[in-house]
Length: 67
Image (cartoon, rainbow, N blue to C red):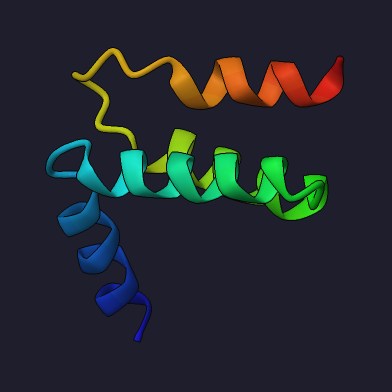
């Protein structure tokens, strides 16, 4: 089963679509005032962003939560 999860993560990291979706869900939670879930999805977006893609939105949004 762990191998399956590794393969799923590789699949999700093949482009930035999963990261963008997770970031957008985080934005929705933040707008609703649910900062705990917003943080969870921003962190997930950071994890899912492919290494070769410079996708900074989740980090910016996460920093915005701390203000």
